[in-house]
Amino acid sequence: MAVIFQSIAEPLAAKGVCRVADDQLDKLDLDLLKLLVEEPKAGVREYARRLNVARGTVQSRLDKFARVGVVTSYRPQMQPSALGYPLLAFVHLHIAQSMMNDTCAQLETIPEVLEVNSVAGEGDLLCRVVARDHDDFETVLQAIIACKGVLRTRSEMVLSRRIMPRIVPLLEKTRAGAP
Image (cartoon, helix red, strand yellow):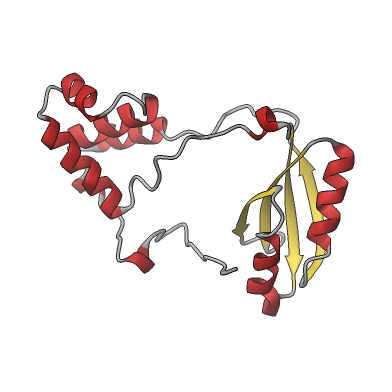
């Protein structure tokens, strides 16, 4: 199983996709992105109606967003807790640097490991992990510890999510600074 390394700064550079400069997003782009986030099921025709533009205009903007990496997925967001995994934790891993790719490949085989990020600071990798309960979390943690290259772990259990993942405030800030 191949490990895909994706930099936060240049997420799709390997595919020839580049970052959109601040001055390349106009008001229509930002309004469309906000609609797309807030009402993803509305559809191109409805977006065009609400924005008072042609359907083709909306479609070309959506195609541009996909091409340059602004929109990377149209898949639904799912809550692991609704699937029986209510425990959420962040696990910091200290790893043998020469084992980074091997460690990530093994982490990828653990279904409860939802996300792995390479980080600067305390630790080398930060994993977002779910579990059914505390006993299950211990089992997942043991699977993580068993991965080649893992030297030490530190776990933090989430008690509650105070702010859910979001993008609209960033779009609004961008819109406020846009020409």
